[in-house]
Length: 164
Image (cartoon, rainbow, N blue to C red; front, side, top):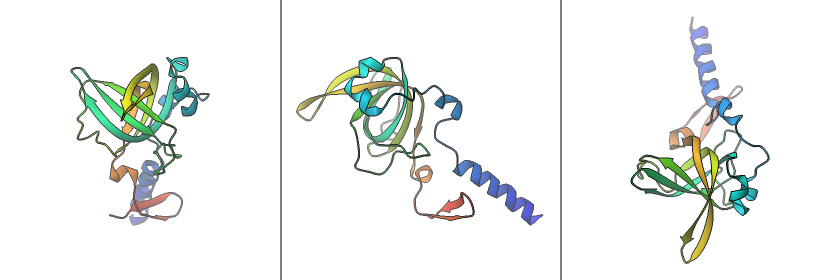
């Protein structure tokens, strides 16, 4: 009985641990020919295309009927998590309908977005003008310290836990 219970729990942990941020059905919408480097050079060229990107939130700005999230792009790992690296090819904006609380979507948090390219927007960064690619999110995942992971112990194939 104990072995059966342990096996069931281990299978559930394995399934959750190996899952990705964005559902597989949604990932089928992504145009694999688009790189972030290409997008940032000419966002208008990719208008209407769907891309999967992620990174670190720089800021969240709330307006009357929408919220804008500015993100510093970072490469994604195999779980679609933005990597903790100083590598970035630029910034992008995500235009969400409705209210997103800036405390929840706070600077420094990681986000993964599957979004449709809706064009570009020019805004200042310090004293220079910067052209952002603008995405309309179809799916997104806001990483928390619990879901992003920390030091972990693994045993077997993919079964493990996070040390707190």
